[in-house]
Length: 634
Image (cartoon, rainbow, N blue to C red; front, side, top):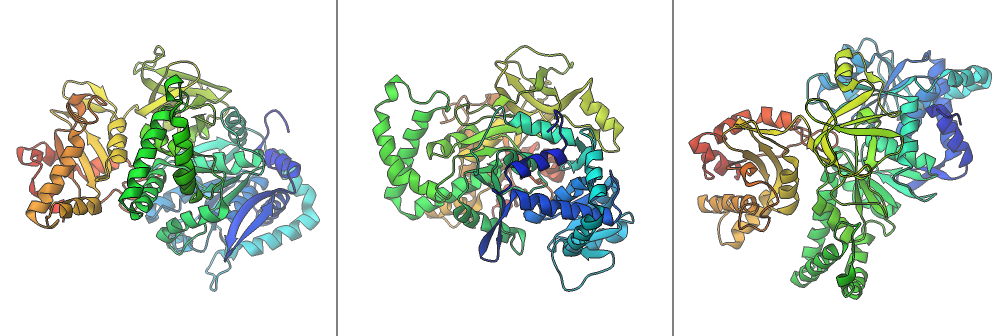
């Protein structure tokens, strides 16, 4: 490869070097199929040739909407081989205007879509006059106007290569490292999301950088449970595993999103992955499922589990400082606990799991300590789509829980204050980075580009600090701080994550203070756990007394962070909430309050619940037992 390879050179190099090894794993019916590196290249070339035969010119855009599967990977390779620009779209986009905007804004000529997502495209197609063809990945009974099958494109590509291979190869050679590879749209906290322009070199540079902080063994298997359009899964999964001679497996697609979600534990057991990419929301679900299974085994199992967990966490500490002179006596106990308990938990993950890599949102340190205790460390990483996305990561042998890991090589980083000037080590400020992985800009958005890219530096909008030049600590959003009435600022994420992870009675949390006299908190309650709590006290959960008891329990969970509580001192008292608003429904992708990475979109929540927030600053609303809180528990 050249010093600055394109993705075409990159894929050609690794698919030839590891030609006979398995790269793609997919379940078809009841059987897991295997596709080699060489077969992947050949199939990708045929699709690319088919797109060229259809008239796709260099630089033309092709939208890609599908669940994670082999054809997603092959379709993107085809687009790139034809010199096109891939526009990956999230399957979690439900509103027609979200899809219409992205397809039209990107100027996509073709749309490649799975059969399950096809109804969405059919619905918006009349509003997308620039789309010439819709390529359906699956064979379906009835095709409509402008629709063709991928099978037809594949056959067309094979025919085109037979007579025009030289033209096809010349197209690939004409693509340069600074040509656009993808337009990756942000999750969108506004009506018009930004299209992140990533070049071929952005991708190949970020894979090279990733090698400096994390690695896997050849032929390791990664189960990708995140959508492939997600930048984290795209790079850390698809392209990085290719460079390591690893293989990727995708979760079998169900008839609906819930069915696909239920396929995850089955896929884990069958694939037996060595590594998985995750986001905090999924990791929390894994933990809840593990602990639900332990509770089913009875009180003695729960007691043993809790004792083993406490000892393992106290021994391992923050990973880098595990053990110690006065901890030696715990080792024989931990070996026994691991054999009789934790090894069985790991079997539910297939028995071969080495580690998770977590991204997409801040990962609570307690969650990291938990997975490390059971023998499957979950390493926090950090990145943004505009950086393709990897900026830092913890890894085996190089981890400090609470940090976001070592910064990748070949990347300049600095922490800047509100005045834009670099601040001293240990001081919080905005994370600002520069390197070959930094985006070319936002598609057709010069104002947004100028704001994000200044003198070659990407201003991430995230807040963090560095104690040395190696490990980065990310603490929240730089521009979404709480602001008190006297102008003091504070990042809310630490409290939100701690309460969510530490309390079985709380599902989701948003802390709010926008120059108000006190802080309030929006809480999505864990209704099932609260109802069990009320019943254990001999109360009917639907009764007034039962609901008052449940609200008091939520208050107790919040007060555990105050003086005298078990979490005393974790967060400044003045930022703890003086009013609680209990909400009737969770934040979800369906109501638009959670984005595609399962991260709560603060601005949308605050807008959606503006009246509840306003109510919390009234005497009635500040009362825990106010009518709205009582109604929310019904």
